Image (cartoon, rainbow, N blue to C red; front, side, top):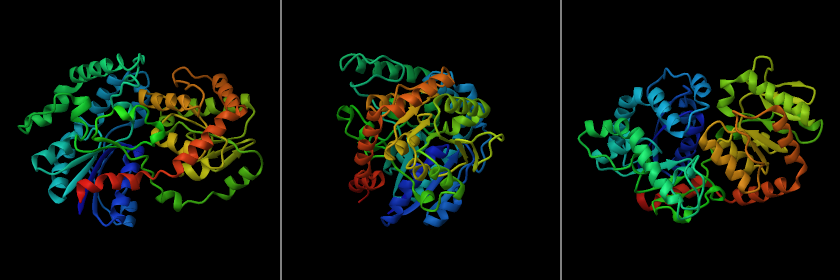
Length: 417
């Protein structure tokens, strides 16, 4: 079959779709991947190696992700969504839509990242099946928990919160998000957050079942496939000799990163990490974001590392300090490492809270409030409490048997023949 896949976002939003594309291609399907990259990374090389047709639409986006991260750190969910759409999606909506129309015309089926309503519209117009991929279960209504920032008040009150979330979403987004549908002469779905942005045929939830509490209450088209892990770069990467020497020098270090959010405040994040390491008296590997600390260098009990695949390094660490991104959360837990989450936004707070609820982490430390002393205390508590490590290792064993790509293809099979 010919299958088109379209995604939008940063590297963390593209990698899961790359993993799915690779799996479908190995299963015998002809795959075309269309990417709108807000951090202007290009995936032509890796797609050529995998035998996947690739298009970048547009070739370059004039969007400063680092500046946006800095400005948006104190926004609530609706404010953040509106801002990210206004600055990095709406200006390119027509390009994304035209690419979606071509993708639908050329393929038997199309798969899009959650929020790609232009692809859903193009599939509807051409009467082709459209499936979506959702990276975070917090966006799916369940009586077991409330929407972000709302207090969870049980299975009778929480559904009311979700209905109010739809009302708020329609008030904030319906006009701009349905503009494309109306211009095409189509009637958009009634609710933008719960209906417009996902497929009602099949919505793959790309999170490990361990994190999907309340999934038994989801509508039946929402199916957990598990995390879509792209392993191609890890297979081609080897530990630098300097890092291997550092690991051999002492006990397993704490790994520290804030992902792409670290770039918005490189000096602040490095100072935070280094002060916390000094206060906690631990060894650490820190993903460097500052010219003061070049990659593959060492200062006493700290090793500074550049960009790299997470899993091979996390496997050698005692805990992972991170921003609460979906990919880092899964990589840390799959490696058997307890986490310390420093979330910047609501989705990251969801992952931090879920880790804490599962006994895999201390309470999350919101980025806007965290101090070096608080982080040091969290590191010390994590390393000295054996239950965190034991539960992380148990969770790792559970996750090892789950292959998100294999499950996703299994769930797609009845629909694509």
